[in-house]
Amino acid sequence: MITKSKSIMSLKQLTLLLLIILSTKTFGQTKQQDLRLSILRKNIVGHDFVFKTEENTTTHLKYLGILRSKKGDIYKVMNSIWLWGQAHRATSRILIFNGNNQYLGNYYLAVTDDLPSFIKDNELVFINDAKDNDCDLKSITRINFNNGLPNKFFRKCRGDSGDFYSFDSE
Image (cartoon, rainbow, N blue to C red; front, top):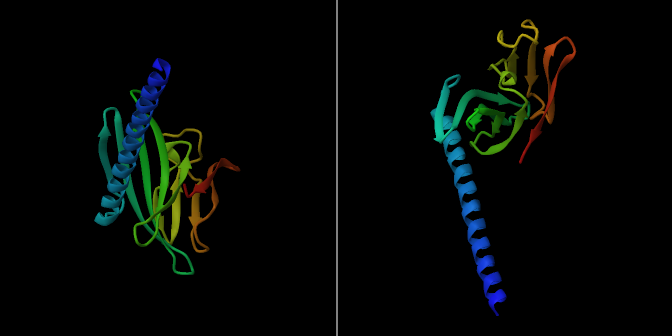
């Protein structure tokens, strides 16, 4: 009987722990969603908004504007850099929303230098940064959304080298 009581107590404790973890994760996601929506509603193109979301955690969001497909689909594009941990590791993404500010998914990028610079002529434009000595500064990547949201794209660095990035609808 004692072992059964201990196992029931352990099960209750485990259940409580799981609920706490899940609620924290959901709260964190909700907070991120709220931050993103507030930036979309402000509709300020090119401004870097910085939020300290937790201890040792900072979120940078930059709204780049709207891209349209030939069919009339609207894609709102936002850069996201999430700096976390004491060493400030970075997670970089291009966030994609529809015309109603509903999150569609993202392109997860290897480094922050690979984020797009701006939108021009219905293209997402990537300019290589002077700080990145490996990439050719004259090499520019342009991603066209005329045929809709690309499943993947190639981000040029130097010559034929660069990185492929895929869309994730999570």
